[in-house]
Length: 152
Image (spheres, rainbow, N blue to C red):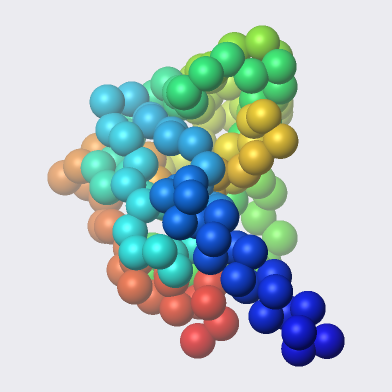
């Protein structure tokens, strides 16, 4: 069992070195004028550092037959809400962009912080972003969010 685990870790390390892309951010994401930035190799998501408007355009690199986005609300300190808060879901076909307010339930994202999974081309990029005006949003402590997601 240990040998299989070590082989898997080695394969992932080699794959990362060849691609130079983190597994959790296989393609670039932009929201409005902001592009997500991946931190260190072990980070679990990329970050849009500036707040965006609720109707910002999410864009990926190339047209996808299916583009699926789900965004989960986070607390002000960056931890994901565990009280069953619904995810915002966006689903579009044959495109590389979608407006954040095109949710399946028709409700725009409320001001706050979100962790989103963007699925296209059988890959998923994970991004944390904030909806709201720059001077009105209390940005989360992304270090706390990272520790929460890493189980620390």
